[in-house]
Image 1: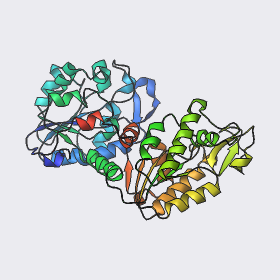
Image 2: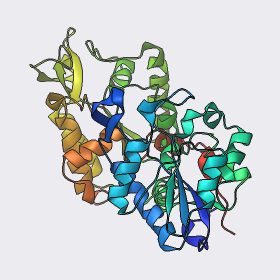
Image 3: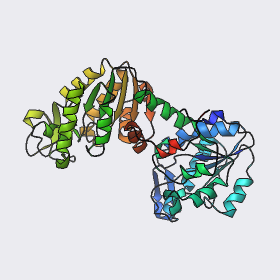
Image 4: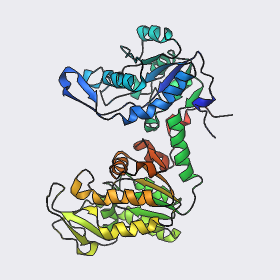
Length: 401
């Protein structure tokens, strides 16, 4: 059933516990002295619409997030202080940082908030109870507010205290604007796609996405596979792939997946050529056909013939979903296949959804982000949702009557 949205709530005079994803990269001249700055504020920008909606509706907001992996104890390197400073700049108003995320002092500060004010809690993962989904810790978080809004889809696949257990003590539990857009975009792919539906999968390992491949075979009309994971499928077909990345223990599974696709009448596109080199650090590379892969080299990007075939497969698509780069995208020499594919996705007459950090970065590098139907902020949650799994953070939200 559809989930309750923050727009369904009467927020006037309420204190809202707003779980967001502020897990951003930090950089600084002297990190050991705590002189961090937010290096990429994309996730902060994504959190603003829901935050501003709550404030304009007359609520006070208790913001909560994790940052990094502090191993369940306070660590200055993972303080949200730099995030608070950048949020103040983006929001145009004070965003004080609480000394902790639970406790009497934090409760007192939360109670003192006036409508339109914001309080940012310190890193939730400074307490091991957060990742343990501890109900007592969740209850302490719940005492800070009158209602709960989750706008952190990127963390919705985690059964953590601020995501799942808190909703047992604090209700209603509504989806934020970003969470709602994510669910609508991904639901459109899985539940009511306009066909043909084409899925593009890349990245390094088959093992990371085997469940996704198997699930998508039930949904898609065409599946295009690139990146390092393609070489396990090519080996399953009997091709020599040189020193390319292969997961030997997954070859038989890849063979079964290809057989199942054939039985279902689904088209699976694999690379027919590749850009090869001795290593990702190599300054020299060349393009070869898959049947001519040198034994001493590895495939690090799709070649132009593969790009052409993948682009042709997108030509008639009405819905496209893409996760994972086509090569070692972080190296400029091996980024062309991914960037050019981003332009092809943007240019096709289809509703497109792109998810995953590297894939979104490729779309932005190609200068076509505004032509993509939806750019997902999530990584693991994006994949698990497409696999058909129930995400704890989504299941915990209140259903709309």
